[in-house]
Image (cartoon, rainbow, N blue to C red; front, side, top):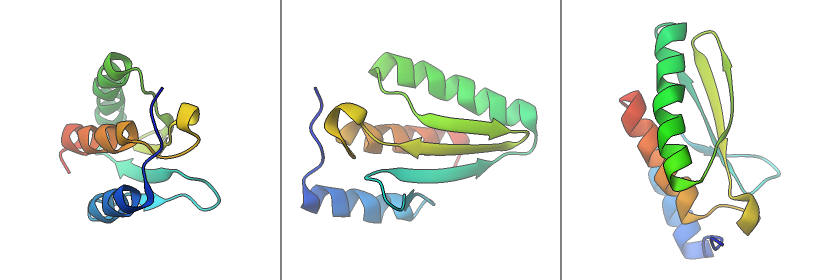
Length: 99
């Protein structure tokens, strides 16, 4: 089981991730980001690349895709909030998206 981030580490993670467009989700201990790609193929490719890492790390995003837009919410359900896995996956998603 993964532990929820301690308050100081949570604040540090939110501060770092907000620089790349991640934001806290109102009413939840979660973060979210919307990625906009050139077209559906690029969006779907991003989701496919992300899915490989998510499966490898056994940590899966809540996400939706409409045409070229992918909306992502990250939280760790087992920890009832943000964990290091969310930070790790957010950073990997930014890398895969080229942001």
